[in-house]
Image 1 (tube, one colour):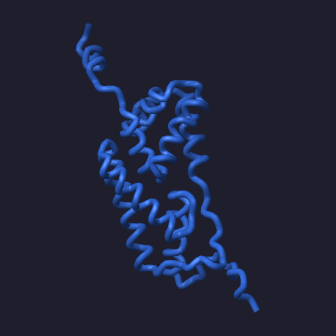
Image 2 (image 1 turned 90 degrees about the horizontal axis):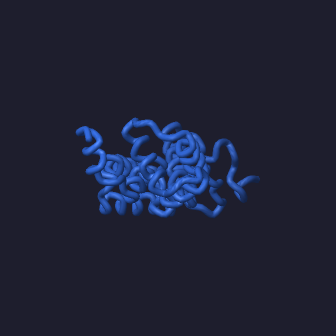
Image 3 (image 1 turned 135 degrees about the vertical axis):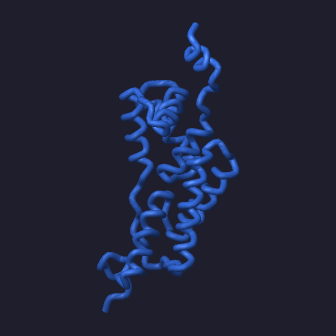
Length: 173
């Protein structure tokens, strides 16, 4: 037995928690969504969950991933990245400085989760930050909330309407 084979046998199996943390940071998404991505990718690729978990770890480190797992993960992530829903006329837009602070908090939590995906505290912080942004933006997904928040921040900086030229319902004359 050579040294590298022995080293591979002794290496711990990639953890589902670590893969969950990596997906939470990359998508961005909640714990539940990250776990659904893993399960959906496993079912779609026709492989065991541990193979998809290993694929997430391999992608993170730049190692090769089987084509079936790679394709299944990309499809599952694409499904999880729902586009932002249009804000209702009754939605109150958050103050730009409050929104900017929360977006920066989500970004910082994503960086920490990517650096330490095994850390349950970091994953919890990202979960809380993503949830708060979803509530602030009236969105169902963290990805959609982040996109909508960034659009609103950019529109505010440019002095433009955050409604992309649409007049909110009920305000027309």
